[in-house]
Amino acid sequence: MNKTIVLLLLLTIGIISCKNSEKEIDRAEITKQYFKNLDNSDYSKISEWFAESIKTIEGEHKNTYSKKEYLEILKWDSVFEPNYEILEIEQKDGIVKAKISKMDKRIFFLHEKPFITNQIIKFQKDKIISIETDYLNFNYPTWEKNKNGLLSWIEENHPELNGFIYDQTESGGTKFLKAIELYENKK
Image: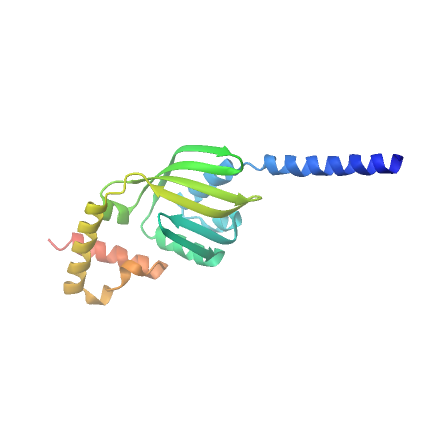
């Protein structure tokens, strides 16, 4: 009888300890550090917060990347010197919801103003496993007009840069930035 009570007591303490340690993880703080390091293009720190695979959802576009693949996309992003600002952030039920403003050279050229997004960041323990992005102010007509103008001009004047728009590597980002600079200085 005493052994049973002691065993039940130990199991109860163990279960409560597991639940408490799960609650102690400050996922909002991890998310803040993630965006701070994105803003600084500091990949050595960012890598620590990802699971071995990361799922991204942007509208109908759903992708799953290995940690290495996702870091390559972040290196592409860094070429444009992004500025991330957390406008709002909250943690509820282990999920972080953040409202983010993002501006960089590519966005400024194509969109002419910062992206404002709602992001839902999901975790497994203290590792990010998915990032869902909902664009709140995406101006499709402006984006398409600027993108098509750039692509047409590059096709005609610098065909060696063709394909940059779909190349999400650091090299592709460099070509994208070069195309923007050439286009803006054509006058």
